Image (tube, rainbow, N blue to C red):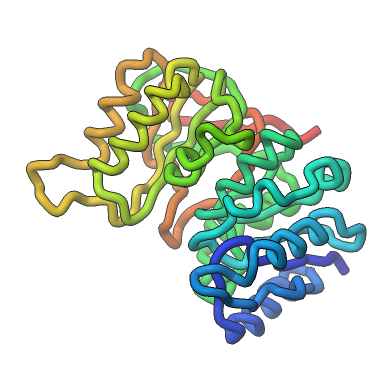
Length: 289
């Protein structure tokens, strides 16, 4: 039986979730191993930085582990980035699944190791509920099936190919100025966010613009921004903010990508190359080598 090792790089989760997590992964054909400190709790963190980093280093290099899955998001994964053994992690090349705060880890693993990781799924999804689309794409990621998405909504027409990078916008911006920020030149940028007002999303996108990260993108894939409405309707909406920053770049842009802090999101690879056709509303990932 394959082995799924659960780690907690970010915030804590109650131990009551353990049975639901075990049941889900057992049904998917995995034996479950919980990292030693996975249910620790220290303020808003799942234990100390040293404990969380130690668990992550061990899981990502463990010969008996087939996949590594983050317990949940929340806060804390960026605190581990300078404590990871990237050389050993790259050599082992274990599939890593995470979402939200774990975006920082996934982008760092791409920058340092050129690893393909999988965003959209944390282990606590098993406790919260796994919908059909999330389940099917999780299985597809485990099996490394080639992924193709249809019915995306065109914003700016055109075609482009590039490495798919991005995720939660806050985490992407938080890497700026660090050794763990990947280059976005020629990338297809995925953007999602949760609980942020339009003016705050504006601020983050403007920081990326001033840093020179937007002018060399190949394309943009806009996802759900859950609970990101303005308190004052006069402030406008997120769609207007996105148009301000992406609408005039002269590159293909699509929206309604089924990803974000919503139950019907998908799991997809970060760091994999794909072809975006904004005219047809499609995104086709390359086959795995």
